Amino acid sequence: MENEKQPIQVEGQPQNQMPTTPPAVKPDNYLVWAILSTLFCCMPFGVISIIYAAQVDNFWAMGQYAIAESTAQKAKKWLWAAIGSGIAIWLFYVIYIFAIVGLSAFAELL
Image 1 (tube, rainbow, N blue to C red):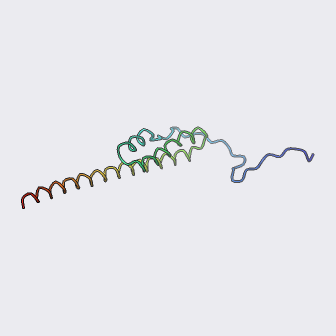
Image 2 (tube, rainbow, N blue to C red):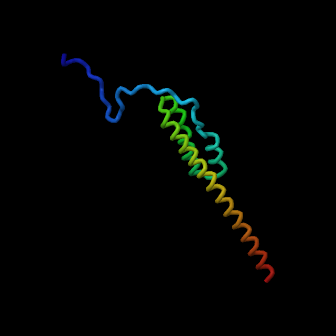
Image 3 (tube, rainbow, N blue to C red):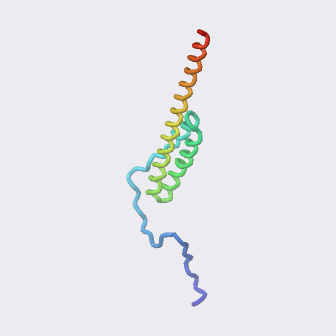
């Protein structure tokens, strides 16, 4: 009986895991908002948000519901980081333009 095949044990893989029932509602993946924030706000943070958003549905389909929800929350966090930094950049830009225009108008008075 030495030739009997033994199941392969993968380190770190849970053994005899009971299937879990999915929560009632699949979390929103925020993919559309992540794409829009990448285009109109802040590209680096938006790309990170897109990466997390794209993973949500895959984790949900594999039955890893807690990871799917965690990934959706990370996508949302990076989405808001992209929106916030985009707004901050635009505000600094507008303030800078008003300062330049104001200084040039003041310089003409002298």
